[in-house]
Image 1 (cartoon, rainbow, N blue to C red):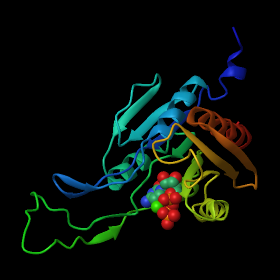
Image 2 (tube, rainbow, N blue to C red; image 1 turned 60 degrees about the vertical axis):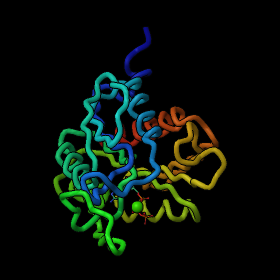
Image 3 (cartoon, rainbow, N blue to C red; image 1 turned 90 degrees about the horizontal axis):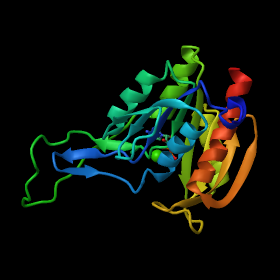
Length: 229
Ligand code: CTP
Ligand code: CA
């Protein structure tokens, strides 16, 4: 048998992972959603368990149970915000893989909206930034938790990724140019850069989402072992 320290560098670590796209209710039967499949996030949970981690997944989609991980199902950004913030204190790492809606419907109707004389006007208001709030919460409460974000960009991917990394005050960001071949939504593969707040930059050419998941988790291990050995 291999030594646990080699094959399971996340043994003893608790991760908090969000995945899927949030759904923002318009009325009881309709929502504003996005194209996130949750596949990259599910690959991260699967690889994290193989590397020895346990923890909590906050998800908007159903997926097969992964040993060592508890799943909390949510729909909206507000629900996700509450679950993520409440599980930060016991987590060694937060990976925000979810596609969180930037806006939600200000006043969702409590009964189904009927077709009428004119089209309804839907007023939107901004959602909280779960990752930025988590990063401030971690800093102000001196929590030992490494933070990872994702950025799907259509233009100036590296520059936009770097900006997000510093604006949100996080440790790592996985930047993805969604216009690159094979890395669209719902795909089983992706091509990314993994950027670190200390200036590190790793390019991963088109690869299975499981491979990207493992590279990301190994980058996370490096930071964890350095910051919180
Ligand atoms: N994120 C979040 N809460 C939000 C919006 C985004 O936690 N309300 C997280 C995502 O899960 C992702 C990272 O922030 O890990 C970047 O998301 P992205 O949508 O690319 O960034 P935004 O700051 O929303 O910028 P924009 O959509 O304008 O590019
Ligand atoms: Ca956004």
